[in-house]
Image (cartoon, rainbow over all chains, first blue to last red; front, top):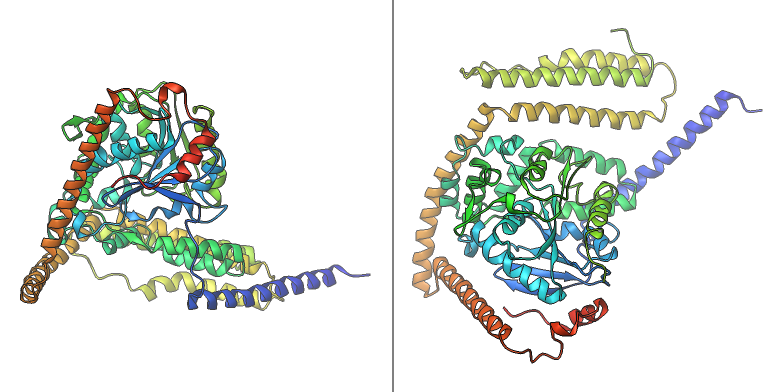
Amino acid sequence: MATATDTKTTDHYEAWKTESERSIQRLRNLADIVAGSREPAVGQSARQEVYRKGKARLFYYEGKPTYQTPILFVPNLGISRPYIFDLLPKGSFVEYMVQHGFAFYLLDWGVFGPEDDYLTLTDCVTRILPRMAKKLLAHADARDCSVVGYCMGAPLAASFLATHHEFPVRNFVNLAGPIDFSDMGLIGCWLNRRYFDVDKLVGTMGQMPAEMVQMGFKLLRPTMDMSTALNLWWNLWDEGYVEGFRALNKWANEYVPFPGEFFRQWVKEFYQDNRLPQGTLRLAGRRVDLGSISCPVLAIGAAQDNIAPPRSVKAMIDLVASRDKEYLEVPGGHISLIAGRSASRDCWPHVAGWLASRSSRA
Amino acid sequence: MANPTSTDDLFAFWRKQIETGTQTWADAVKGMGDRGQAPPAPPDPFTFWRQFVDPSMSAWATLQGAGPIDPGILKQWKRFLDDWLAAWTRALEQAMGTEAFAQSLGKMLDRFLTVQGTAQEAARRTNKATLDALGLPSREQIIAISRQLADVEDRLEAIEDQVEALRGGLPSTSPKSRGRGRTTRSGAARKRSNRKPGPL
């Protein structure tokens, strides 16, 4: 009969054996990563380009929609590439929404060069967004659409709604989009007009270069690289984790510059003057009054978001005139709201469910 | 504190040490900035950390001599490192969220831009002279063409809008008019898949 000591020894042996096998697998996968032998396949959902204006492109993701109300998805401009929303099969916000019956259109702002330095935030809100929205309606053969903004895309889209009342928007969803910039944490502190001279930066560099964007975000969480490396080593034996890491790591290292004039306007009018919630923002002569938004609004903030703190997102709910409005705070950070396991558990189902109950069935 | 007797105790003990140490370090850095005075010599990191690391190493040695190591120690080690990073993240966030840090960051950027501006201006002049000599367009000229193209695009869109507005006033010649009912979703999907990219 085995004694308790024997059982414990066997358990220890099995546990160490498993750990040894994992360590061998870790070394294999590490060699694979270092050799860069497999390029991660990202953004695999079938799509077609519907319209192009300058660098901006409107994509339609192919599916069999069961709702007549298409979605216009407006992501951030600059900083990063939009394939994060369609990162991997079974790990894609786009795929999820398409599978849940929505006609999904993504606005890709593009990757900017020196020729785009003159592009302003006003251009984006009053020229590009209305044109794309119009093309979407024509392409979808729809009477109205839902607008979903993520990160910076949310205040841009909200500004579009507030200045183009004639455009038929049925629902608006703000995903981690800051609206009230009065307390923006570290970024807000660093961009304070007393220390940060945006005019000098744009005047000298022409644009906000990708390298500086990267430096800013790395500084925001200096331990991020160490933490990523540690988690990678710990999970390196797991093929699924490694696949996700490759894709996310590729995305996290492809920064996109800001057009100079856009960046100047973004920093001054949003971060430094906080005009949006005060109703003092004017774009192409039109006042951006969030109080004029009356469609159903859903705002989702992430509890540990250090880019768009939840309070800055929640402010939208207090400012719009909508009767049907809801705020939801989910655990996690800025990215885990839109990509990864927690997004597919905490955020996507809520967005899809909320929109489904407010969209027409085909 | 008494010597720890199990791995759990050891990690709890280390976590506390790390948190205390990190917080003390952050307070020291923050204090320098807040006072707005010339910063004193920074604390010697070796002396500073020794008070936390030495007891931990001694506890580790005691534990090693106690018998076979539990395989769960790897998980605890990972948890310990996570906690350590989290403690540092919190401490750094506190230190970087100060006016003093923002001010020094702003000054650093200002100095960089001053140097960069001078270098860029010199490079621009040299490049322009070289391109002129080779009979090639300068960067500014290419950018100007790009802007002209964007203007042409805007004008085309304005014309497109006007044509659509005029069409709206005329009876539809399209085989499928809105008056005949909405296209079914499957029909719309077929239409999408056949459609070419829109006009530029």
